[in-house]
Image (tube, rainbow, N blue to C red; front, side, top):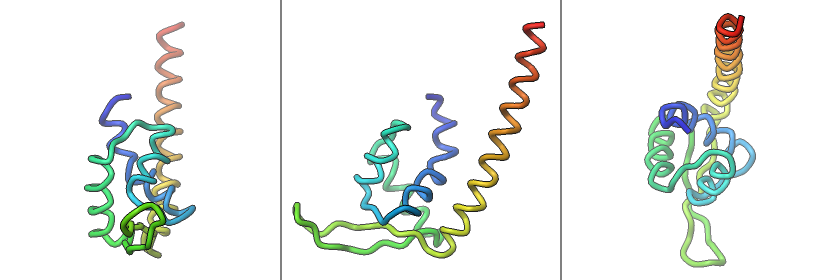
Length: 109
């Protein structure tokens, strides 16, 4: 996948994933990687940025599989931003698809 496409939507993917449940970093990587290839080296700086911007908060929780894990949760600001970003994403995708269909149709005619 074209790397710039991926960079542009990872914030949204993380916000959407966290809107369903709180997650720790590796869990987010695993969930998002089911559809988009990402690494832990990508997710942690992104989570730090989202936390600094007030979209997520972090807390430690005990783990049955070792030391406590740092979980991330959406803030109210994060939930509002997710809704706005989703709306803008679907509008953007629709406009790009329309453009591509028109141009592709012109070339095939």
